[in-house]
Length: 265
Image (cartoon, rainbow, N blue to C red; front, side):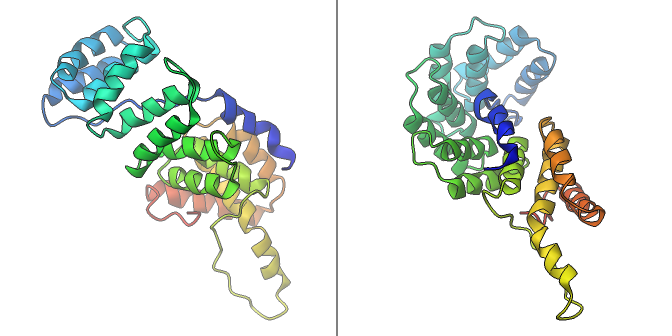
């Protein structure tokens, strides 16, 4: 798989992603936002007091956040069974974050027997609703062959979906997979040959994947995926100054347009 295999372990074994509902509600929005503000200040007991009445009223977003507090032991004693109860109530109402969190618990075997099949079914539900964290987890499962046959094309497809939504872990994994030659990038520069003997043109085509990979790694680092810094150094060693500059341009376009005009996707 190449020189960079050692860096896969960071994401494959050390990461847990749980989804807290951050979207303000139209009903009782002031109380919900108060709970979010308390979370930001790590005043978890206050957050619980804000979310709990809303959860009791059947508001799915608050139910998910109560589950999140119980899962992590924030402001309450950690209790996976109670977390599952609240997640399930929110998931029954179709809340993507709650579906994802049930997937996480089944993936790791927290409060339930570990079951990759059930985990992926929950992740599929939330991924269909556009949750980037779920696309990442599905990609990871295809990458590792967990509960399914390993498939790099299917893994990369989900990483692409999450990466273009701004998920830093998927951006990192894509950059790594492209650098290692596991998959091809979707970026093709729009150069025109000056003549049939323009060999620099052919050379630039061969660097498209590495250029895209560098842009992805820069996005990942921008989004606080710290392992991307080492990958950036590794890729830059293989590119000339012009292609490094192009990668930085591609990266900047993605950031400045909020991924609306992002040639690497």
